[in-house]
Amino acid sequence: MTSRVQALANSSRVLLLVDFINPLDFAGADGLAPAAAQAAEAAARLRRKLDREGVPTIYANDNFGHWRSDFRQQYAQIARLRTIPGEIARTLKPRRKDFAILKPRHSAFFASPLELILDGIGAREVVIAGLATDICVQLTAMDGFLRGYKLRVPANCTAAETETAKLASLAYMATVLKCVVDEA
Image (cartoon, rainbow, N blue to C red):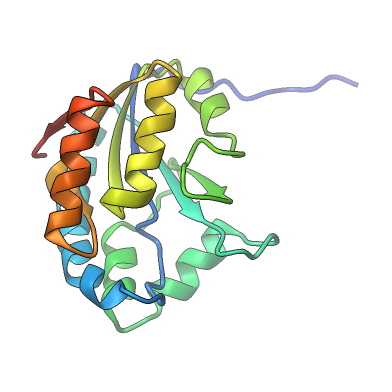
């Protein structure tokens, strides 16, 4: 029996969208939601720009403790909401060409196929956008740094529960993790 593996298109960088497809139903989400909507708009503009350059998009999303989760099903459920989470999901609607992974913990690298996808694409630079700047984005950047990836975190494409937490996290990523922190 012969196995056929579809080759992935090569790209030296990828756009990684972390936890944007999210019901925002946790303590503190009220503080995050408005900033998350703004970050999603900025991330959508960035995705359009990077699409023109042939840069693939990868969604890395929590499975919310449901070990039988399906990303497309999660998207459909959240996109139906008539609240900020639904608006964010519709703004960043995944396309057929996009990759999607479910992550069991905060970092998109931890116990996920992300590194295998990046290797398959040939990516050495990861542009990280998402929620929350000071948790999942920062921990994903930390794991990317440890793996030797070049990292970019467009500040306007991330959000945290407070502006203070966001700014502190961006400063940490810039100084300690050597991320390029800029605006998209």
